[in-house]
Structures are given as structure tokens and as C-alpha cells.
Image (tube, rainbow, N blue to C red; front, side, top):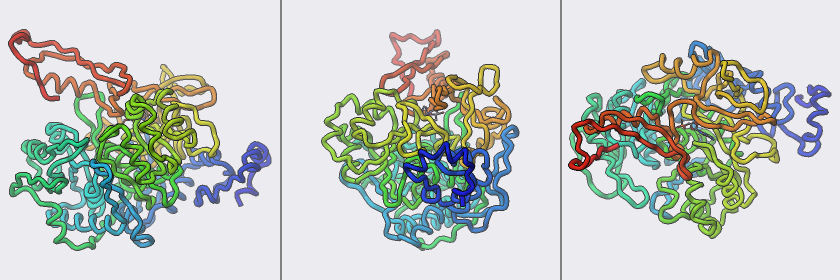
Length: 596
Ligand code: AMP
């Protein structure tokens, strides 16, 4: 019994906790019941770091459904850039996200598609999502997509986009979701790098009441992508688009397929997806996430950082084109058998009450958004929030950039009526899931505004000083590194492992370097201070200054340019480009325009 094995010293130090709340590890995390010396959530965190293999092995066995069990928990050497978890194990991510829940609760709602048009939400049950996924998996297979291929998905948040991701996982292909706001050029660069033979898109997107010609963008993009053989086109609007021999009408063809699709047995370390993100050079990096470790980490963080309980309705408003959409609109909630909202619109359409009207109508329990949207909404005034019933809310979250105290206070006091903990979650595309956040901790543990605060289970943050040594004291700042591997971390950069090791593993050998700076307070809490490299963060989106310079320099009139970020009161950072024009250019005569 875990309680009996406590030393009297530990018992004394936690007696206030045990006495008041009867800290019950087994109720909090059933698989942790046998962990020696674990009597509170903070001692569970200590255990997860110092007994990493025992912790992750128990969690992986308890929370994932395996086709065959793993034989080794981890085989990692950060100094070499070698990261392997759960080797020898086989599983299928779509079984974990769908079939096992269909087995127990087929009619439970998996997705609530909050369409751009307010009040027109669509609910999809686990049974329906599995059917969609299987039909699509069969369709992809019929068109020659197989294990090892990578399918590019250029779609807004919608059930067919989620089914497309899961269909890839079903048949063993990787997916590469590209944010459906990116230009044809950005899309084609990502399709070429991923060497996709198939692209999935919609005829048109709809956002903030505006129609966006996504199929046309794909048509332009694939002109310079010789690998692309098929473009699957789903119909988001009723407007027809020009279809060529290359294009497949998706819904029509899906309906001809069987609703059963044999799942591929995937190795833990097979690729689940690529996701491109900005670095400090002009070329975006295709970060690689694999099957078991990523899914486990997304599921565990979703459940514990947000205190997600069965039956809750989880509202992450990030687009599926970003890692937040992958981990907390799709994989985390679905692995947990949850109900997740897919938000297609904007925070101010048709008016600045959109989020809170949606919270009232859908009865959302956890709301997860970006500081930039909160700063924007704060300016419109409290009445847009207060006219709606938000009593279902239990946890509020933010991600993507630092949240300033004013925005934090407004979120906490006005949106959450001072009832809901606000979790400022720090993580990045590379980490796969949340690494530092105020929760999980004891339910009444203090939360400091604007601080991510505490490491998640299995995470050991360290700060490096200017000499590259680990800073041991508190009340200090440094380069944020993570001292030991965790299952959710990216494994490599697609086709460029050398860049992966050079960027993340070599700056501080033996540690994972995040690229961020952080401050550790007197109490040992972490606060992220911003990027240490040439990456700026506009509205929570990472952009490399070199990437923008590359685009600006393509403008025929431009000789050279330099891009910097500046402080912006809503977007966090804005972009300034200093441009030197070619001598031959007459600015009085020529209009200078280039499409960024
Ligand atoms: P991305 O990979 O696009 O999600 O961007 C990750 C980057 O966003 C991090 O490296 C940080 O610079 C920033 N970021 C994410 N979450 C936070 C947060 N809670 N506080 C401060 N910065 C954050």
C-alpha cells in the first residue's frame, strides 16, 4: 500500500494535505497507485521525473490500447539526438481515438463542429466519425496511398479534416496538415518537402463570413509539385469548382467505400505526422511526431492540465493547422473519449460575443484560446461576455505567447467570474504537448497571473546561464532546456536530422534546447520571457524573420531587407521590414506591391 510505505518525514510534510483533502493518488491517477512514496500531486511529479521509466511504462500500459506490447520503455540519448519510446510495441492511433470508444459508447458525441455561421453546429458521434474515417481510409488505399506515404491536408477545421487525419493514421500513412490560411507558395513548399502524392482540400473555405478559394490555391500550389497525383476535394459550400482528371470528389467517392477498414499495425516509432514550423532560417522545418509517445502525451496532458472529466465538452479554438489543434482539438480529447469542439470562425464574427455565446450554446466546460484573442476581446468591453451564461466553464487555458497581467486578470475575473483556474500553458510544436502549466497541482494551489509555473509529469526544466552551465539558484533567468526526454517530443526534422540535432541537442549537449528564455522565481515557478533566436511571435504564430526576408526579397523592386519584431499591444509582436530598393526603381513611377 502506498500509504504505508511513506516515511514519517514525508508523512509529516504532507500531513496538512492528507488531513484536509485525503490525497487519494489512486482516484487521481489509477495507474500511479503502486508508485512508492507518492502521496500528493507534487510528489507524483517528482516520481515521474526520477523514476521516468516506471512512470511512463505504467501510464502507457494503462492509457493506450496496444496490438502488441512494447518491450523497452525508452532508448534515448539527447546528446546524439536519438529518441525512441515504447520500442517493440505495435498499435493503431485511430483504434485508440475511435474504435475503443465506439465499443463502449457509440452514440457519444466526438466532435461538435462550430461552423462559421453561428448557431449551425453539427454533432458527430464516435460511430459516425469511425465510419467516415474508415470510408476515407479505404478511398485513400484505393488511390494507392500506403504506409510510409505522406498526405497533405489543406482544410479548415471540420469533421472531414479530422477524419482525414485519422484515416491516414488508420492505414499507416503520415499526414501533413497545412494551415488553410497559407499562400499557394507556402503550401507548395510544404507539399514538395513532404513529397505528398495526395492532397485533401475543400472547394471553398468560409471564415468570418468570407468565402476563401481554397481549391484554387491548391490548383496553383500543385503546379510546382510533380509528386501530386490526386487532389481530393470535399464540398464545404454548395458552389461548384473546376474539377480536372486529377481531382476526386471526396464525399461522392467515400460513399462507395465500405465502412470497415483494416487498421495498420504501426510500430510505436513510425511517423504519425509532419508539421511545418518556422525556424531561424528561411526554410520551414517539418517536425516529425511518431505514434505512441505523441498520442500518450497529448492524452495525458489533455486530461490533467485541464482537469478534463468524462462527459465534459472541451473547447479548444485553435485551428487544426497548428500543433495546438492537433494535440488539443483532435488527438488528446479523442484518445480520452472526450467531446471536442472544432471552431471554424473568428473571435469577433459576427460580433465580439462569439466565443461566449458559443460557450453558452454548447455548454463548454474547458475553454482554450490565445492571449492575442483575449487582448482583442478585452477592448470591446465586458458586456459582450456578461450577456451570456458561462456557468458551465470549469477551466480556462491560454497558449502560444506570454499573457500579460491585464489580459490574464480580465480572463480570470470577467470570463471566469473568478471561479475557474486559468492555465497559462507553455509548449511548442517540438514538445508535442504542454510541458509547463499551473495544473496539475493541488486544486487550490496558487496560480500566479502570467506564469506557466509548474512542469508537467516527466518534465524536468532547467535554465542555462551565459556560460552554458545549469543555473541552480532561484530568482534567475536563462535559456530554457529540458533535462530528460519525454514521450511527446519531436523525433527529428523530416529529411534533416542534422538540423534537428544542431538546433535542439547540440547547443547544450545532453539537454533539449527550446529556443525560449525563461525566468525562475524565488518559489521555483517558471515564466517564459520570449524567444532567444530570430523568431518572432505574431498573434501566437511563430514566424522566422529570415522567412519574411526571403519573401520580401522576391519582390522585383527589392535589393535587400531586414525584418524585426516590435511590441504590439494586441498581437504581442508586430513585424517591421526595413527594405532597400534597387537603384533602378523609381518609387514615384512604380507601384510597389508584392504578395507576402
Ligand atoms: P509553436 O511551436 O508555433 O506553437 O510556438 C511555440 C512558441 O510559442 C514557444 O517556443 C514560445 O516562444 C511561444 N509560447 C507558447 N506558449 C507560450 C506561453 N504560455 N508563454 C509564453 N510563450 C509561449
